Image (cartoon, rainbow, N blue to C red; front, top):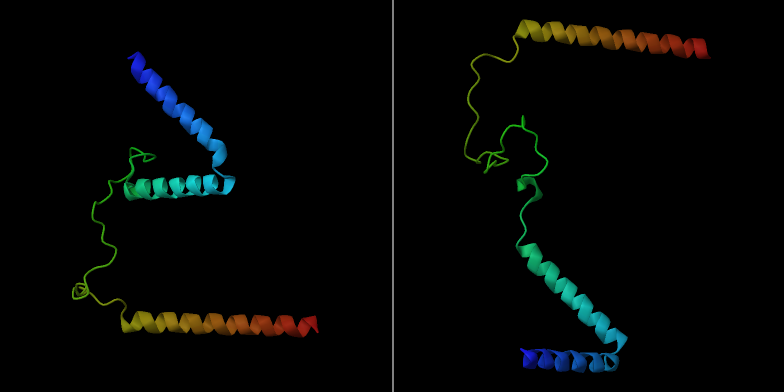
Amino acid sequence: MARGRATRARVLGALLMAAPAISGLVLSAMVLSATVLSAMVLGGCSISIADLPLGTSADAPPRLKDAGGYPPVNELPPEREETAMSPAERAKIQSELIAAREHQASATAAKDTTAK
């Protein structure tokens, strides 16, 4: 056991004596490369932050494991059971929009004439 301590002390002493011989630029490059290497190693082991179990409330719905943002290209949406809007409803809404546009235009014209 004492022999192991002596060996470690000699290695540590040799490293400390060699430290002044290493220039600041080389030491900085070594530290930078070690930092980049460790970031790459740790980055490969990471998971998505959204998959972490932290910060979710008890009443939140469970996340799907394979959410899939878009449906497959060849999958068509199902047909509607009823039409979106009947022609009568469409005509009524168009007439309401035209009336609102004309009212807005007349209000703007009246405001412009009183401002001049």
